[in-house]
Picture 1 (cartoon, rainbow, N blue to C red):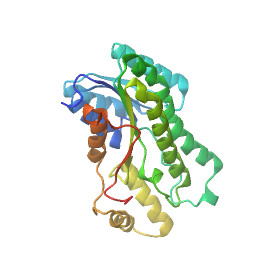
Picture 2 (spheres, rainbow, N blue to C red):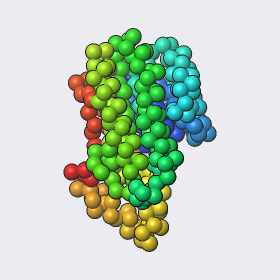
Picture 3 (cartoon, rainbow, N blue to C red):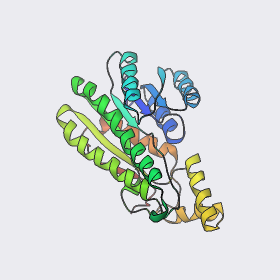
Picture 4 (tube, one colour):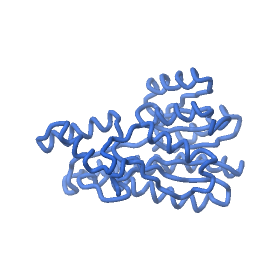
Length: 260
């Protein structure tokens, strides 16, 4: 197993990609601290982790609030007897959909950028002292292909994902001397409830059908198929394992060729 005996924190672990990532790490031998604001959904995933014979702990946390993130990491250190090997930052929001820049409310812009960048920065801030002390660690941030190219009608979201890339590269440079790898996975459109919401909103704005929006996304991809949550989880597993020991500061697109 690729992460046998490792201890992992996964933010946004309750749904979609977060659940797939959590279950994949558990399948490959990791114990998990799961965090999100929706603890009911977290409890269900934690039960699945335990059914695989791994240890799981649920901690409610808003990753944009430093006191809650501090408490999360403190709780994880207690649960893991002081060692944290893996941090996966999944938590994030989508913000305004199909909205031109002049129509985005300032508060909406600030909320998306803060949530997706601050919600990545704070868990890193409070986890890296432990990784520095133990001289090892793997940090994987979920960015997005909208942070690799422009994304019309999604200014706030695209801005935030470019920001996650900046955090990833900078922290990788700082942490390299401590034997800590820091990378980002950049999903394209992934088959989750969030994608359904996106397609419905676009369809309503354009006067299209849901299927027309869906097909437009598929046609933009070289492989002509939608990314599944497990595709993202597989890449996270790779980056969290020793198979990726010599990879750091990188952004890897898992998008079916949307950003080609």
